[in-house]
Image (cartoon, rainbow, N blue to C red; front, side, top):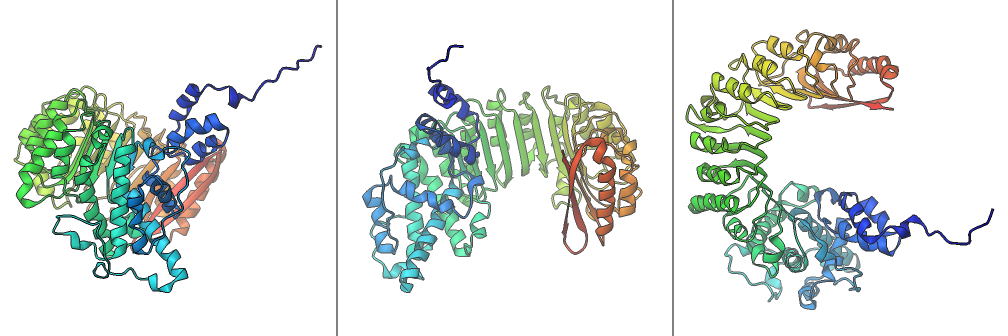
Length: 566
């Protein structure tokens, strides 16, 4: 046999760059280890993977004790003047090296909280490093002892910046945001959220207040930064959460952004004298979009009629709507019914203005609706106003008209009032795979009847009521409930004793992987029951192991069980 002297290069060298780009595009930016490994293969792989690696460096999933290390890289792109503010404020500017890539230009997602957290951690780290060398720097001096000429603002609330460290953080966050607006080719996701992570890394009350103040200022200023008009016109997802005054910023963004697909406005505040203008500006932002698909609106005291009227302009494209803890009237509900392409509709703790608020919804059909949720809990402080606007006839009509294609339903209501609703669900919703029910039950016969139907549930959640509910002897053995035959995830808030749990689990051969329930007293007996059930199922289902976790508040214990498949 003749031997060949030709050299066949490794496959990593033969993949065209354009193919590499398609491969990396299907890897989540959150997969840091995968993208980092790809960057080490060779020059072509590095060149094609780095843009994806740096597309969302401030994603909330990346928060760790090393988060601050990213800041010097961005500082290297700032001007000498912007970096010089560090020197009189007891921070040594990092050594500037020529960057291999233009990292700011690659940004596609900006989570302001994570950016702020990185700057905060870096500033604290640099001060600690300096204090090791010179103890006099352990406490940041007040602004009264410093000569800072770069700070210039007309806002009368500026005195919240009380020391040099506050100023450094404010300055760096502002300059990095300006840099990103100017250099980024396109930011698709912009998040202004407050999740409490600042407190988790040791920030005090004044520092968290400073964060909120800076967030409002940046959100207000960011549309005016050089390059923002081009950068933000690509925005696809905007989330503003947790008590930010958003009136003027929304007005500015509405003139720039026309392709937002996901808009989430959550827990906002506004100045009392500008309530109407804030409402109008949010409505304008909605109206100016070409194809808004997802709208989430929660915890807002704004008047909603103009906002929901604006949603009618997006009826052709809206797929998911979730509203929670807002005032709503019948006119707003009529606007909602115009969105006939909805696949998800969740109505949580609505404050109804009128006894027939839900009437338009009861007479409407959503041909594509797959996920419907409503929460009108008796123990909620909103319960009376919620129930006033939803009669049992209207409630049942909503389910009858839209049950055929429903795959997921969430009903957390007072079943003492809506006593026939679960029967309607069983009759009109044959394709359910995910069911959540909760509230006060006069009796659970209707729930048992629903679970005896031949549904092929994947997930079942049974919530508690106003007080702990003793579930002993209430449900029949799970093997008798047809809807639970294929269950993978099951959570029940009722108190269940070890003896009752043994009866419920006996000969239940569902492919369950997650099980969660409540109990009182000692949990050791429950652990033995779960272990016995695992031993019985191990060979039937090829199970590898079982995990058992307990969380207790002193009154009762929440038990979580995980079955690990081999």
